[in-house]
Length: 477
Ligand code: NAD
Image (tube, rainbow, N blue to C red):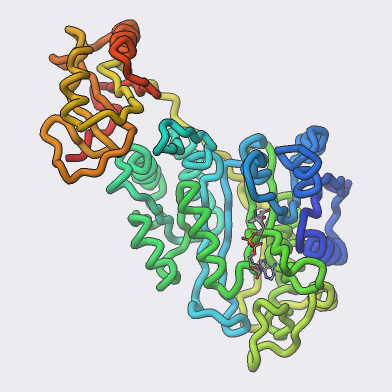
């Protein structure tokens, strides 16, 4: 029985690299039944803001396996990223990107690099919750959830175990984002305890990124929230020799999507130039996923052999190392001719159908949540922080008093610094004077008083404690 998969040829170099990839895996004996769907630019330009026909979801839900070429997302407002939508709609929470160097056959400054980046795929700043709130200020909401973090971090440890890896690292910025990245780090530390056989370490993302770009051989598996993972997996792939060399798997409980990590490279389109290796290695991951490990092994080893032969596309071609500069089609033909061969210097691969299918879980513990105050955000440009502090104090209720005002996160009242630059976006923190619990009705009463005084309330954030711990950050300054 052939395994049904959904295929999309995409835009730019997409159709060429997809054809090359399918030619290779079919020649290797992949047993797949393909259903083609149309995605990308042509649909965006027809007015479908999602870049996909509603009927295509039916194919994806049925086959549960998607081999996808890159697409072009038109510039400008209104168009939604199809990748982000697909990952969220199909619940593809884990993005796995192996970044390996193929020294000395592909030029790289990092001959020993073999890093797998496990990127959280659904949350973080990619939740797409953005607002313009005042004349001067725009905001993007960073959402890090406890189940989302547990799922991806556990996935990274399980992946490391199943693939005989030695270490899992986490990259975070919890010295600044103490609550969101702090949660990711805390969960990493908790889950790491369950895997004593694996080493683990934590890096602040800036120095972690610098080390990754400089000495990638010190890393093995790295788990990251969405944004850092997005940026750093491109860096990691590029320093192996080319972004054209890395494939990626997007995995969820029900479905999976396989792709190259690069985009549609429109400038290279239609010229038989593009390197199909990224999509091919994505397809290799797909073959392992659909339990055609033997075919995956055959394709991957033939590809490594072709790399060793020096048959290279323009992006990795290098005088003295490469032997032949080829186009997309000729590269595919060379890999097909090498099916059955294995590399002699580069490590051979051997995939197994018995590799554990990773299932992750998360805790459902509910903390005791208490409402203790409200951050009221105002659009205001009528004076100094002291003016605002004095005037707002008139809105105080016996149970909710103004305690501090900040602007762009920095305390400006009481006792702010005159040098602090202020925008028209003010956060005014109201708390019970004795730290007692309050009700939602009290906040509504407060808001009505504030608006009666003529202020433009642009949003509020309730302040809670969870099991007695503050569920909100303290204010700088
Ligand atoms: P890109 O990755 O498409 O290309 C950047 C450069 O990398 C190209 O100019 C080319 O020199 C090189 N390159 C990329 N893939 C290559 C390959 N297979 N072989 C040889 N060289 C290759 O990035 P971009 O130019 O920033 O984006 C182009 C379009 O792709 C945009 O519309 C973007 O939104 C989209 N995009 C799509 C995806 C996806 O569908 N998964 C991912 C990233 C970007």
